[in-house]
Image 1: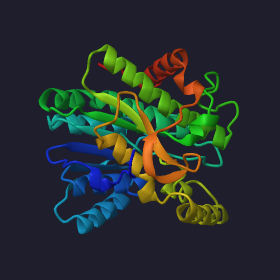
Image 2 (image 1 turned 45 degrees about the vertical axis):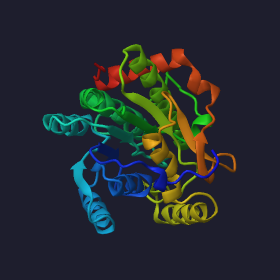
Image 3 (image 1 turned 60 degrees about the vertical axis):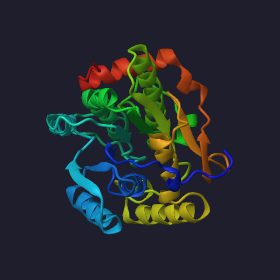
Image 4 (image 1 turned 90 degrees about the horizontal axis):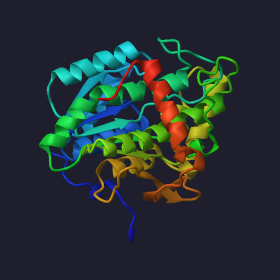
Length: 315
């Protein structure tokens, strides 16, 4: 690319309906706000209704013309995911963009979702798997009614490069290692995006599946979670350092926005910052994919596990 890509390059989004998970802070918030600034109708899908309401008020203050609304969604509860999807489908509106952004990063002890899954795998992977499958009819509706193809953008991480799928211990019931579980979940996110792309193309669907990563950005992942006060303070300081030296959360949103809107994005693409080992930078482009993320046999096995665990079958 001849110049850094920036939000000013985004085409008008008027008429597009967008759902962003985890939109109350960080990358999710900036993604939602910038898309709203460009005319999209944006749904902030947030677990915490209080924080979501604060984010919505902030967005409306920054973008007075915003078409934005708050919806409660807890990806750590399949009942919440199903209820959210039921409400969305009942509107009978086409969905032009789904951004699977929300995530949990490395709680120091093993925690579980409402359904008994390890929290990181259950939230980052299974919650988004079920959400995407349940919302596919709305995405297909957009595919039938719009010239521009609808997109599913799943947020992965450069941490996927150190990730491995342990199919005998996906839920970390035998042994829990915080960063191993996080890296596994981010690898699974990327493999899901690729496998979804293969299945959509095989079905001759116009829906696109792509992925993005923010580099190393100062997001809420560094500041929240089940940590002691001292640990939270240390993580906040680390986040501040990352924001100053590597990527701010606004800069970290650029790859997501690129994947969501840029005309040059290809089916099954994966995008991230191009500077300093892909950890930072204003330039966005194709990101490096670790070999294990390209393992199609493992991707099919992961897909089958996600279907069985969530009870969700893609139509």
